[in-house]
Length: 353
Image (cartoon, rainbow, N blue to C red; front, side, top):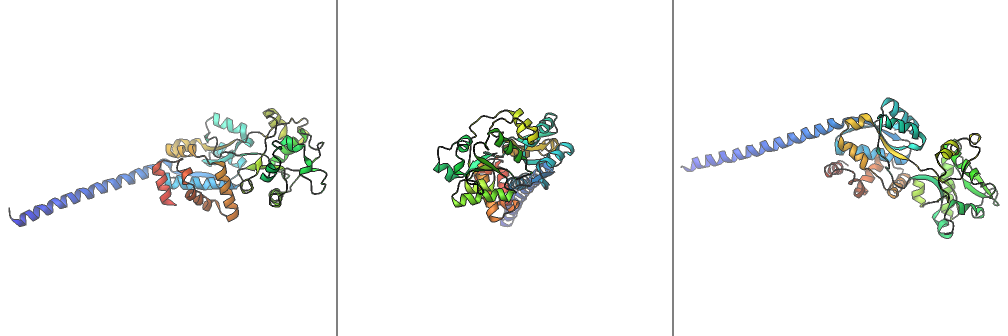
């Protein structure tokens, strides 16, 4: 065989192998595109409530990024609040997802909607350590270790003097118009706190409530009042939630009296605060069309309370919007959120932020 023929055969063999490799690569890319398109089609377009408080805002934006970058969904955030969002989901099937629905206000109709298959609880506990109740500053708890419960505190009004009448203790309740105002007022009566030397203080507004706590903590003064978690205030000041020192007196007392106006609650019973039920709720359409991976992500997603409070402090101090805070969370807490998603989904999210 001549040298020229040998070179020709060698070149033909090389070109054949090159063509085969190129063809294989093209097939792989095409398959990847088909899989990606199929994933997108499976998830499709969906709407998600962006509730009007910081933790829910953060969660909505984190969900949006993970569902879009990790699973090919097309997510539209819509403004929301507990009652209107639940009503719309229940009656109209929109939005598709409510990441942080505080269910205490809609417990019975939510149960009915779930029983009838219109709505589904994707996660019964999207955040750990949350809840409402009565709190004191950490320096108070440290200085007076014997004050372990609300009942203990009630014996010492002298440690929490009211600004206008120092002979009385100040218990800071909720601003007028808030649902928790009724609960605090009725518990104040149930524990006969006025007879024990206390005054129920109306802080006037959310800013007034926050300001009263912040001023007391920053001055090293004692403070006793209502608040809830997760919030920036609890995270920033490391407030201590009190055990009430009594058991929960039952839903009949709570739902039928404690949360009602005084004229409808003539005989309130002493009780610990009701369990705060918070769910991630999805519509039946989302469950059936978004795809198993998207649903599994929401089922797996749980924020540790301490990390959520830390993120809320970040949002407060940096004046960060939910979208910016979501990116910060994803970058700083990979050890948390990568447990919620598949390894492939996690890599896509990391590449997309």
